[in-house]
Image: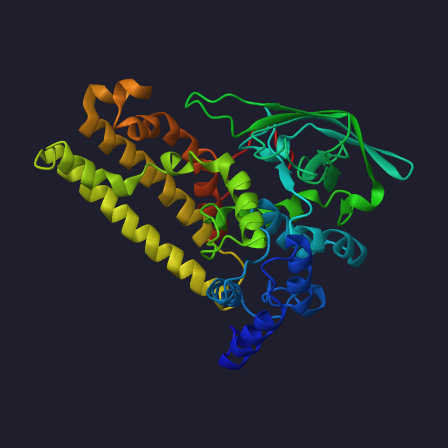
Amino acid sequence: MDLSSKDADEMRQWVKEHWDPSGDLVSWRTQLAESGWGAPSWPEQWFGRGLTAGSDKVSRQILYDSGAVGMASGVSMYLVAPTLLEWATEPQLQRFLLPILTGSHKWCQLFSEPGAGSDLASLATRAERDGDEWVISGQKVWNSGAQKADYGILLARTDFTATKHQGISFFLLPMKQAAVEVRPLHQMNGHSSFNEVFFDEARLPHENLIASQGDGWRVALTTLAHERSAVATPRPKFPLSTSPLVMAAKTEADEYFATYSWYPQRAGRPRLVEPQARLLGKSQIPRVRQLVAEVETLQRTSRWTTQRAGAARSAGRAPGPEGSVAKLNMSMTAMKSAAAHAAILETTGVLSGSSVSPHEVLAEVLISTPAQSIAGGTDEIQKNILAERVLGLPKEPRPGDKE
């Protein structure tokens, strides 16, 4: 259930009694977590109230209206925490959940590899048991935030004799060790949001294994389902205040979301298509008008799909096919938007920097949108998921797959 009027009033009263804008961010978030109001959709025994996902949105609004700030945001909250809540043991939850909520621990995702992107189950990073520890060797790539992360959720192969999906395990890897090297990747749009990560016999304790050895693929499917649902996770709103606590939360969010500053360009900036066509006098050109109409159609259907997914989550249902549908729609919107911007800008679109000002952001769109069809699972993977798991069609032949 969502927050009732009684619950909402109780939360407002609690915030009124406990919020201290001159306090410490971690201390405030610890109080908020222990009250259950910071993440009311979480289980009652794990810093929640056992309510539906919609209650989280109401909670955030109450905090905003009260001039207060909420829990930490980002990969830690939207990917790691839901996975742990479903699969982790009680000791693991006791160790990791509260630091995620307070923002004390930053996390990254260590799944994809140079030879295992879309076919993730073909990963080759190795994990070998050594007493009470696991030794990790290999390489990962496309890892956002890895250079700042305290921990990473890691997929590694623990059995090379089993079928590829069954030989994988899921680990929580401490990132701050000499055996872990993070190298930023320079993108053609001038940003460096991603990294490649190398493991030279990195170590982690056995208690950082999630579920059982060989269950990694099943655990990863939970993470991936939430990843598709959280592709468009917005930056949190903050009250208009210069108090130390609010400013600390804003600074934290600024640092985190700086990594994703080019993501609006990756998504195609569809809302700029029609105004730009009018500004440059191209809105009456038939081809441009058709492209503008296609972008508007995709935006509306995407918005409806998002609303349907939100309603499902508010009703307490797990992430469903809407995530893959929304992901495909975002890719199509980005591609159509890029095509529209190219038709509007014409040859100006191949320029960059001050030479294309004031249309520089649109020129960046054209070299950023290809990433939208890759990040979070390629379009081809999303189509396979919908075909096989939703429509029940036969599986696509996979050469070399023993299964």
